[in-house]
Each structure stands twice: as C-alpha cells, then as structure tokens.
Image (cartoon, rainbow, N blue to C red; front, side, top):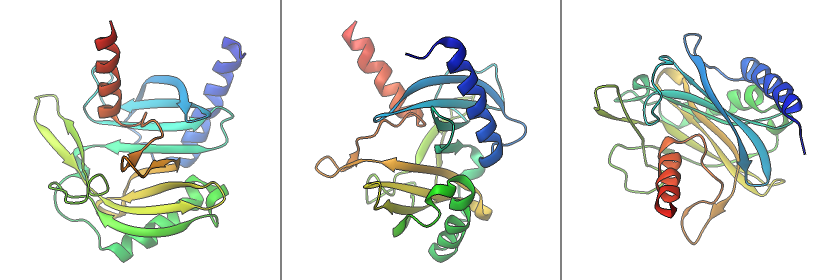
Length: 210
C-alpha cells in the first residue's frame, strides 16, 4: 500500500505531466483532486476552474485524469461556454486536428489507433450517447450544452476505445483513452470521473443507501 508521502510525490509528478501535455487555460486554478480507479488503473483526477470559490459541481471546469505512475494522460474535458453554439468544423478537418493532437497528449498511442467514425454532437441528439452534448449550468443557473465533433478511436492492442472531441476554431474539448464499452447497454462501462453528471448520479445513489 502506498504511503501518503508517496501519493503526494506521484500527484506532483502527475501535475507536471498535465502541464506538459494538456492545454489547461492559463487563468484556471487547481481546485481539487481525487484518487480513484479507471477500471483497473489507479488514476488522479484534477479539477481546474476559473473561479475557485465555486464548490458545487455541474458548472464550468477543466478536468484531467492521469495514471498513478504519471506516465499517461488518461483523459480530459473542458466544459465552457466557448464550446457552445454554432461554428463546428467539418468532419475531415476534425480528423486532421485529432490526428495531429494525439501524439502530443498520448505519444504511446501515436500509431496505435484506428479512426472508426466521426460524428457531431447535437443539442438535440438522435444517436444517443454518441451525439449527446455535455450539459452544464452557469452561476445564474442557466443551462448550456457543450458540443463538438467526436472522432471515435479504437485501440486494437488495448482492446478499448477512445476519442478526441474537436470544438470551434480547432480547440480540443475532450480526449479519452482506454474506455471499455458495454454493447448491450450501449454505454461505457468505464467510470466517467471527468463528467459531472456521472459524479452527481453516483452521489445520489450513495445518498439513497444512507
């Protein structure tokens, strides 16, 4: 079992990896971290926000997942108003941007993936969950929907899935790797620690047990 000092050292190493590989906006502050499991992989989850005084989840944030050894970015997501509305790129442009981005965020996967399909997220999705947007609320309680162009990836050697979601002006909204999929349920089986609705649902389930 790891001791607290060892975990603290690994956490600092993980934050350095985030600074090297992930485009966290410079005006965002680290407001919290978790130590959880991405299936069988222990990971750190780091949450960054522009306003560190906001304690409730469900609003704007930039969250990143890093493996315990601090060698891999397992994923990140940026929930912000700049990723809402019109102006999405065409599918081919999104593919090019995703291909260029993968070696930066996940060098070990640079030649280890296949693009399976490209699909836009829609405010009114038809193909759920692939077209589903990411909802959030601002400080006044108004709901917004983050949308991008999802470039779906398959990692054959890892027998798992992932994606890059490209937003307006080619900005990256999200990247995730090594996601296991439940075909029967048509949803991921890997915990969605980067996504506030997942954490909120988990919290509600725990509260119901009390």
